[in-house]
Amino acid sequence: MVLRIDRYHRLESRPGDRDLQNGFAARVHDPLWLLARQWQMGEHQGENASSPVRIDCTVTRTPIAPLAGDPAFDPTVVPAEALVESELDDWWTIGRRVRVGERFAANPATAEAKGVRFLDPPPPYDAFAGRLDGRAIWLGRERLGIAEAAFGGDAPPADSPQAWDSFRLNYNTQFDTAERPLAVIDHHGGPMDWYSADAATESPLAEPAAATAMRATIPMPLEYPGAPHSRFWEIEDANVDIGGYPPDTAHFATMLLVDLVYSHGDDWFLFPVAAKAGHIVTIRSLSVTDSFGKTYSSEDLDNANIKYPGLHAPGDFSIFKCDGLKDESLVLWPVAESPLESAPVERVQFGVDEHSNVLWALERIVDTREVNGVGGEPDDGHPQYPAAVPVSNLSGKRQYTYVPAAGVESRWHPYILDWKAESEPAFTQWGLADYSLQVPRPTPHPEAQVLKAGTAAAPQIHRISAAAMARGGLELERRWQLARDMTGRPVLWVQRQRRVLRNPPARTIRFDVMEESEPVP
Image (cartoon, rainbow, N blue to C red; front, side):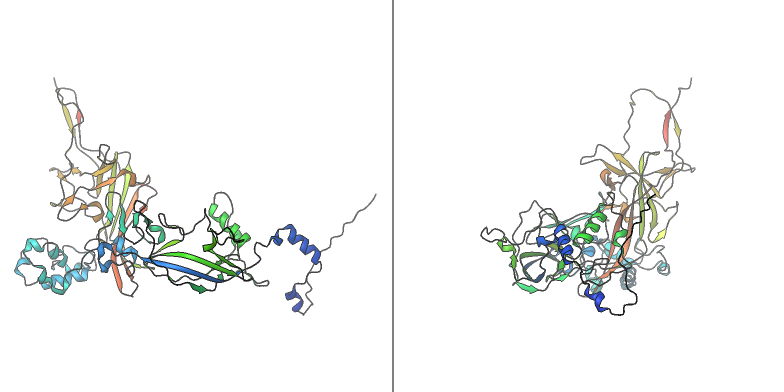
């Protein structure tokens, strides 16, 4: 019997060694093996043989024009969210409404006028019940015979153009620039940045303004949590574990992140670019000088006589690409950084109910208060609902039995799908009637602003595009937002934000119908 014993050799630290210089030196006892290993890993190809030490670039800055040409709506000063999401008459806070109303306390035109006083305002403003409402007086000034001069310095400023699309339940607007108009399409409310706008491709792309003088900067390595440090003995942050992200095919973004960290984690460099908020910033030319004194310039791309043809922009990779603009252009908005927001002023939920075959719009919060199934009287100013169209043949004699509806709630507003719409299939707002009472009466009209269309002077029936409705339903909220502009002044506006629900609101309901019955002999 032969007993074979294998001996394993391993390197271990010497805890008794007090000389730290040997550890920092990191001596290699077999340099030939190290060179062979470097050759095997392709490190002798010289792909990362140098580092950039100087950047020279020229930049153009094209300003974004104010909305409607009004300097008060200048995107170089005012946050983009306030310009796009601002509602009509959102200048009227409760304090301004009370203060302006006090101006007309002795005016005989408001003494017996209807609809110019606060009716059950939300807490904590319920103490102003019965006081004059300055906004109501302003909107009804022609009816009351009050001139605008009577408001003095309390007259509201001009409103920004209304960008809310009540049909598609999103924001749509356009900003003009010298290069191309920037279109904000299908904005659901919330933060805005470069990804919120696309250049209108139907307009020709004009050349930007004259470039600034070439500026020299010093590039710095990109640093982020978990990135490998360039120094030999520098330890990474122990609280960030890049390997903790699962690099599987179901998480493609994490696969790219892990590949970036472990293959090119210390190959990215940053350099500052002088820019201004509210501008389209474009890098016209770029020149990089490395640690060996070699210069790579973007202007040498078409010169075939140069051995190193310069800087090539990636043709299939972009991080901040704005459609319709050049690859080297970036849209910079002044955004509302962490704005203060109020409690929901309104919250309305939408959902297609297959049992009732309608789209329900359910008012959850109206005027900052949670509401139940009890509503007020129908609004006389609401437009008339579409007339009912019979779907059966009424030429012959029939006998019907009337069956009243059941399960009707005043805060549940039905929308009927209209397949014969002129533009596209849409849900049209209808009304319900409560026939469980001795004297049937229609349910109140919607109070939430998101369920209204048109203007106060010319109201319209609210319609919703069928393509805008998600399978699980939607939720719309209105909130006050408070931020500051580029000069530090406060900016206040009302934001509408759309979210997708997991489950749509639904209820079992039976409509009032006429059921055909057997003729009485």
